[in-house]
Image: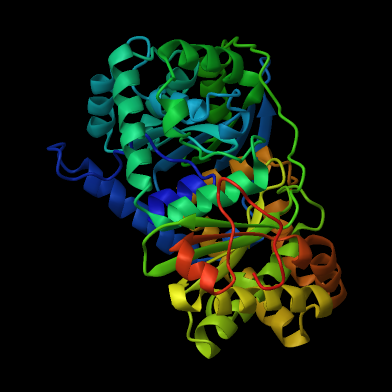
Length: 485
């Protein structure tokens, strides 16, 4: 699976346009300067324990309901702006899968007073970045500029959210691009497996369709759909903006009040209910490939789950810990069946999927599946060992500062902390919370959140060869799984 598709399927933001750090557009030395400053910020962050101690953060709420999360960081003269609007593919109306993503990607393709081309030229002249997009849970608009250009950067973000013009030619161009990408995805067995897995897991409930939609739904989307979605869903009361960088928080708030305070959108929005967990199911998607693509899992947990840290450590032991994980040791190192295998819980607004994904030779698909299922069942029954738990804690606490090692990353992290309601002290207490997890906590999490007898299994490969190994089922007509699967 390509990195882009992984981001789409994992519900992460896909940028409609990123012009940061482009040096080949004839805009003088600014892009190079900004790139160098970004590197300096990274080095500065790595050289100090500031990230682990937690940045000073100030919060505010505008009269129209828009929330601000602000942090002054003086290491380099850069400011990053990251705004999230609650309402990504999760709230696509019935029959209009892909509408949120299309709307998000079009926010930067023209606003009142600026055409798409004028926006591109402006960003290039600043040597910064600006992008909009949609994910499974939110619509995003973000920018990074030199701190002297802060107001211009925030103005671009504010206008994209408040007053996009959705030019008909841009709507049609983006829609056709999406259709082309969706068509190309059919040649990617890994993408096909992920889509079949989510469809089997969630059906028509949220997260059941790709963020970009399907060829059938995208073909029918219109500019009127986009305008209506923007009116109903993209409103200040559903928006959170994080601003981080070399600007005083008082100035951040004043400029935000000036540019976003008079925004008055008040659509009703849409908040769908979580999906019901399906029964154990085996699906085979017939494809003439030499490598079987396998996804096994179940509906997991929401990001706000109170047992999140126990689940995080439990999953690290199972398949989230790279070469040290049980799945990697069993399937790759001992079994020699796959180059890579991993597991993860996707923390979303509503319960996201838990999944194990791997590729293996078609002839070894059944053996690999058995090993994966056995490891899930073993962790469910026995929990982790003391050594595994300590190694997981060391890795997660040690790697945490790297997730905040740039101003852009910090802005993205802060806005998500606010979005998921993780608490004002989340960054500061992260290591403490990881360290507080006990073996009993992990054992209880494995018992509660892993369900070895209720797994959904999707295999993409030659159906006849898979059937010889006892792996049967179809995407169109799924059936309950058996022990032989």
